Image (cartoon, rainbow, N blue to C red; front, side, top):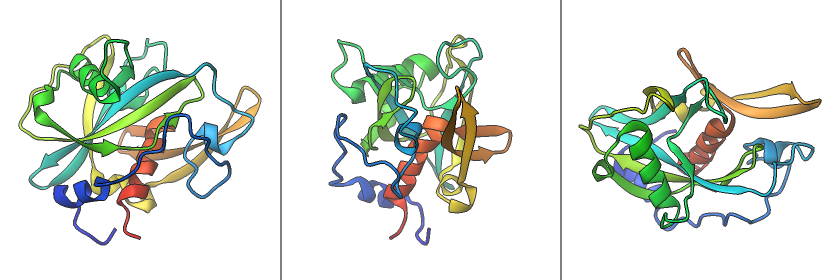
Amino acid sequence: MNRALTRQWVESRFNGRRRVPIHSPRPKNTEGERGDHDLNADMDPITPLKPAAVLVPLVDHPDGLTVLFTRRTAHLAHHAGQVSFPGGHIEPDDEGPRETALRETEEEIGLDRAHTEIIGHLDTYITRTGFVVTPVVAVVNPPFELAPDPHEVAEVFEVPLAFLLDPENHQRCSAEFEGATRHFYAMPYGRHFIWGATAGMLMNLYEILRCR
C-alpha cells in the first residue's frame, strides 16, 4: 500500500462499486480465491444456504483506522471461540442485510448504530457450514461505549487496518478435515488467530483497497 489509509480514501474505493449478487457462480482456482467454497470443489457447503450478514466496522481513530472484531464464546454452536465480525441470521422482519448487520451488532456488542456510517459491501461469502454472508462495511465514529453480550462474545478487540492490508501478514494455510484438505487464509495478530471466513472477507477488503 502506498497511500495513506484515510477515511476519505477508503470511502472513495467503495463509491460506485458493484457487489457480486448472492447467487452468482464463482470461478474456482482463480487468483482471487478466498474460502473453502472457492478453493476446493470437494468441500461444497451445506445446502440450502441460510442468509446472514455481518458488520465490518472500520473505527476512525485520529491516529488511523482500525478494524473491530469479536471473539466468540466457546460454547456456541457455530464457529465457537473464533474471531469474527458481529452479525447473524437475516430475520424476516429485517429490511435487508444492512439492517441485520446493524441490529446484530447492537445486540452482540452494544454498539449504537448512531455511531456507524455504512459505506458499502464486500462480496457475499459462502461458508462451508451453509451460510451465505453479506459483509456490510461501515465507518464507526468514536467515542462510543460497548456492552458485549457475555453469552455470545468473549472479547472485543481492534486491529490496525494497515496491518490487515499488508500482504506480509497474509498466510495461506491448509489442514485435513473430514478426509479432505481444507484451504484457508489466516492473519495472526498477537495472541489472536484471525482465519477462515473472517480472513477470507478481509482478503476481499484487501482486494478492494489495495493500490493497483
